[in-house]
Image (tube, rainbow, N blue to C red):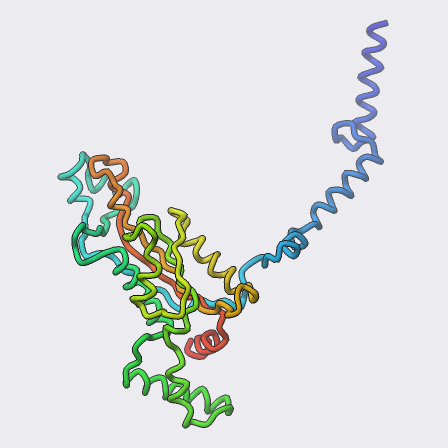
Length: 284
């Protein structure tokens, strides 16, 4: 009797497996339901959720990168220099990390993390064509450039060219984000950097997220520029700076960590302002 029951059970399982198309004994009608659910999940996208939250998915095509800049300390420590500090070698470090040397800030020197941030920010602004002090030569260069643009567009006469040549200033920067985990000031360096660069119309704040700080800074800048109702004055031009002086926190007697870190700063200007984007397209 027990053998008969066992045979019947095996037969029932085999039949269910065959009718269900070989998917865990699921019968055809259940297979149809699973198929419909799968198609619904495939078609479903997060767009509806983003719409409810007011979040714009993906990068905005109206936001452009205008310029970048970098600045590093003068003091350079090579792998060979570290050989006299810890038990290591240039070959050992290079083969495991790809690092040949690092720049570091010296305590009590003229260089600070703020000056590095100012240096990288200034280079990014200059590359973007956003100059704080416009020289006579620069005015003439830009005047010629705008005469060319105006002549082709036939919208303005050439006598307006010098006026439009002076329209790009650091007063146009609306936001300065300093991504930093080791600021000079306990409360952050963004305001000091912004003031030194002459971005007097900008809101400035620090963002701390360690290694991913600059990435979060770019995302934050994009969200500000993509949100027209952020404030009464929309954010169109943003200076994002990433700077750190991790040598301050390194144990120089630990060969596993002291070989990895250095100091420096990098910056990037982002814009959603049509006048900047349009000019960049013409110049490029």
